[in-house]
Image (cartoon, rainbow, N blue to C red):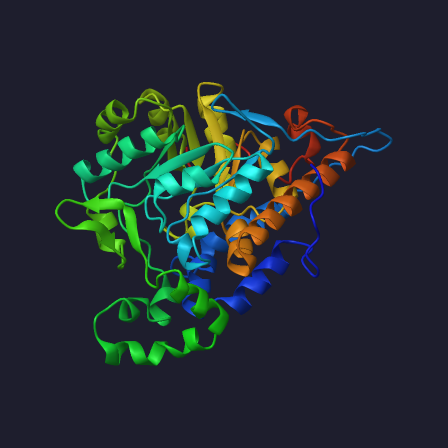
Length: 397
């Protein structure tokens, strides 16, 4: 991976998180940083990676490392992609377009959330790389079908269907930060929470120049237009994806379908039976069911259950190139990064996302060299110290 321009003081993802926290209002930063309930699963997503010990191989000449992979038949320069995250336009003006542009320049894919603040056509036009569309059924079947058709016409090459939002997780930081009151109509109820925005004038100026509170231009309600920005928990609960929905979704989409939100071997096998081309092992970044297993803990059993019948990717807890490499060694053939690139976006916009990709890619190259590998595709469990990593059977089937 070619080395980009260094950003002074930004050496790792934690540095970007620090900058994002100082630029963004508390409610906006916590939307990125927080999880559900006591945030046990959020912390476990990262902690379990730390438990996995790498096994070095020395006296091996490593002239250059190849991080390139093929995902859904498309060649990517990096084995990690940018995960779908709603409301990214709130973190930086036209945030989805900025992130997609950075991903394309780095040679990897961007996955756009249904609940984005930018039109899906504009996001696709912003990137030189592959773009995939993530689907919620917000607004119902008719609204979702229209968005799917738009995504197909715009050139999106895969559809990621999220299945883990039967209800919305209780995100305690949002409650404490007054998210419900800030989105409500009562000025008096907003007042106690406004100081956090006034304390971040640089963010506030950019937010206002970008049009202020965004709507959802890819959720076009009949007779109303784009869905207004609001607490979307109720909307998601009324539009849960069921396995039976995949039939009509496939008819409208007519392309590769990825199932995101798989944590058990049973659901992985069901995805295979339903004809999905890939699954994402994910607990929604610890933002849904608190107490669910970490994504990396669930990965080995799922890989063993489906074998080579379907591509298996991992989402959750990725904060470094070492994390990506550990996930690959345990069977993931692609990883999604969410918070890591959002810290970059929230800190510095497109430049921050670019720096995120550079950091993780460079960390991968260094770690692969220490482990005696020149090619990501040759990496397997041999780079891990036995007894330190999750195995099939250690989580539910």
